[in-house]
Image (cartoon, helix red, strand yellow):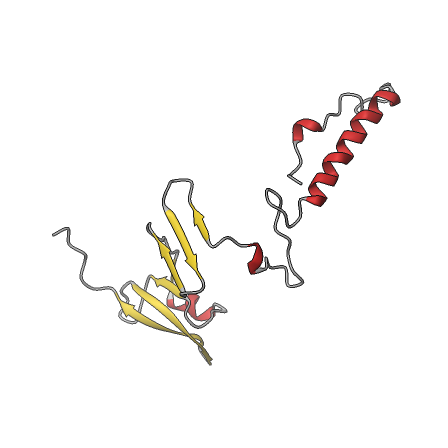
Length: 148
């Protein structure tokens, strides 16, 4: 069953004490039919993906390929462990102190605005935590990309 349609829910005969209950009955009935469509739309095409016990969407409800509305493909391929973005990824700049305070996981990637030498860098979390917080490996950004 598909998703509910807002146009099928009207309140013309439900919003005043002087409204005729016999006319309101049809509106209430239509609203309940639409509510049933919402309930029945769980875990169905054109419906909504349910959350599991951990408040996450199970993999069975996720598509293998997502195509952006801009016509650029965003491919997530778990079988090959590859994620392909055909666009620029904008990372929010973080300081070394902010990165160390994050509850990050091994393999997380961040843009660091003040790396080891005070220069911007790309940082990769190694998944361990020491007395200073989460450990990140920083790669200082040096040479610019040239158009030539």
